[in-house]
Image 1: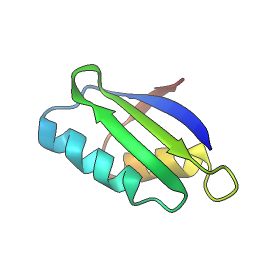
Image 2: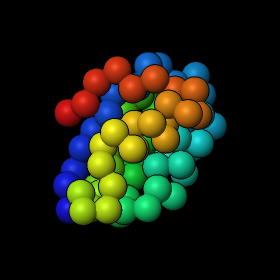
Image 3: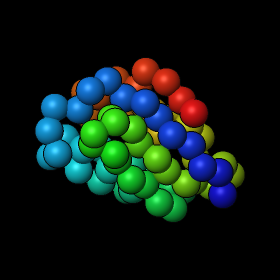
Amino acid sequence: MTDKTFQLETLACPACAAKVESAVKKTKGVKEAEVLFNSSRVKFSFDESIVDTETIKNRIETLGYKVIGEK
């Protein structure tokens, strides 16, 4: 398992955070995901043999939220 954090552009509301968290959690290969609304960060654990960070990033961006950095 690998842990990563994406920095997003500012999330407008808690419902937006919940939407992103739900989408990341439903991505095949993601074990855990948590969105920190106040800091607009998405923390997640994933299996690199199943999914890569680019796929997770694309999933978030298709919802209309921009990933501006990775940690």
